[in-house]
Image 1 (cartoon, rainbow, N blue to C red):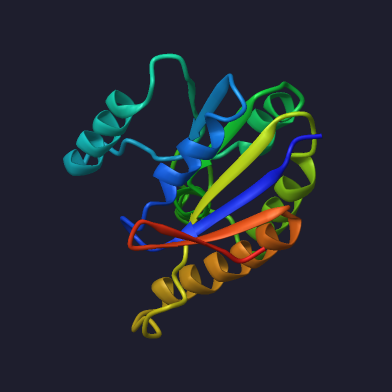
Image 2: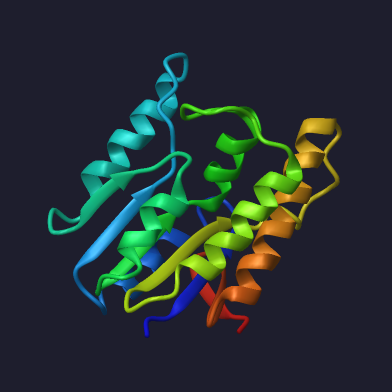
Length: 177
């Protein structure tokens, strides 16, 4: 049975680099990208292109902005490693109705998070990448507070479902579980 690993940290903390290093231990590697390419966001499009170019050619990349349950049901049953990068963008997609689906309410989003933690049991090692958003000030607007609350709850759900949990800070992983 493969491991479930959660990696959390701030922006540019080394989360994705650690995920890649851990995934290379169990090949082949499938990379599940949750970012969406919105027509009015050229910077995000350039970021997605840069990340695609940085991934090893031997990895299989699947772009899944919303249906992680569908994507993982098959991938987790295979061997190797699966990186899901990242839960933060996935939650944003569900909240805001991005990536080809309606906006979901909080219970629906947290229900989907809970199902993911249980669904991803199988021979593959599944590595979740997520942002730690609870280390700053309380956001000043309702949408940002809702997002921070959802992200914090989602991270707790995934930490409970994971075998190992790391916090990345300044490129250094700290083992939490």
